[in-house]
Amino acid sequence: LAKTTQPISMDSYEGQEVNITCSHNNIATNDYITWYQQFPSQGPRFIIQGYKTKVTNEVASLFIPADRKSSTLSLPRVSLSDTAVYYCLVGSYSTFIFGSGTRLSVKP
Amino acid sequence: DAGVTQSPTHLIKTRGQQVTLRCSPKSGHDTVSWYQQALGQGPQFIFQYYEEEERQRGNFPDRFSGHQFPNYSSELNVNALLLGDSALYLCASSSGTGTTEAFFGQGTRLTVV
Image (cartoon, rainbow over all chains, first blue to last red; front, side, top):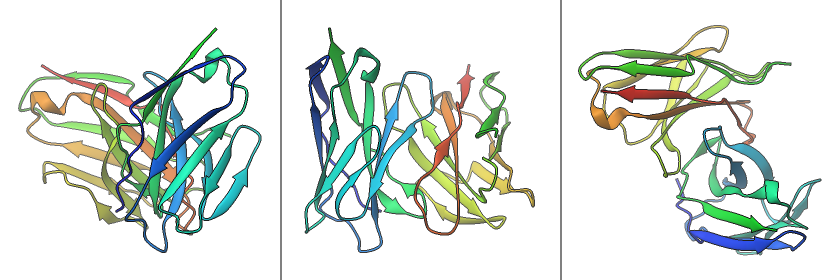
């Protein structure tokens, strides 16, 4: 199971775009890259998943370079409610290793 | 459509006791994974059940065991509880067809005193 490295914390202001980068040097061929959001005392919530290149949904974009050894989660125009911990996960069959995540703090 | 449901939501146990936590997966999901999340830490993978068998296991002692029933619901059992077992226990369900999108329950907060 591949291990991931991401910044411990990030600060932003409402309306800004936030990019969180994750390193996963040991990613395997079958592994997908998945990002989750977690609020205090709640279970993690799925944000986005990708295998290569770029994936976009209604809440975020995920950029994956050709070597797949890193990925970047992009949150457009964050709001106060986006303050949470964001986890980058690598794995298959929903078996993940969670790191410590990135604590995003959005300020007014 | 009910999502992933876990019971109980909170639990207090004494050291040395045994505990059973329960999880009902999201409708249509056949795979259940269990995670332990200590305060301020990321969730740690315990094990995953698919087709009533343990498919993969994390680095947890044998005191942690599980079961999956024919209706895909699952139980997590912890024997000989230690103070360090106090944590939020999360259940995640997914489809065993290979997708890695998992839906998490709200968790069971276990406190060992």
